[in-house]
Image (cartoon, helix red, strand yellow):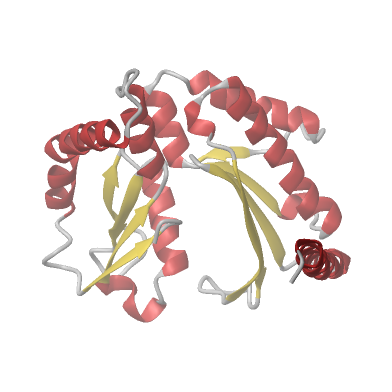
Length: 266
């Protein structure tokens, strides 16, 4: 088959696929969710900005069932704490907020905004907490909502809410959850038959924070071999200082029949 014909076939195939994706996106954009029981969650995580749209099927009860309407992420690597990653994160927040508020017609009161515990922990480590304050203030200015609440989530509360949202009710009091995040690892379990008391499992290391720490000590040697060696050093330090201690402190193994993993890597 001549090369020019191959190119035409490939181009036609690409255009058909692109057109199909464009039509799908347009059809999705038509749907509006201006309902009292539909909510949007916008979270700045260590690796990116996440948007979730959910519909509560019975919001009159504490254990309401819900349906996920949309779930998307824009990766921005905020915890690198550079001007480009800061600007990319701010842009992503604005884009995804507009998706919820304008494209899907979610009322502002039903859009919740938060900064993950992983971001806060990494900023605290590197003395970059000012970046979080600046991000929040700039976002509120751009969307013209000076009174908007942007919650910096406490690690224990984030782990507790993750457990409630992920683990089926039938296994709630028998499961130890480990949420593997980009900035940190957190989880735990409910030691008693209630959701008020939560036993936290927490590490200040995550997939991206480990990678960033490794890259910082590589020096000028950017080979895979050196990366592997430096990665081992970082992980050995984390294991000696935190991992074994955190697992033992949690006391989860005698009390949990199941171990569940969550997070993007899972």
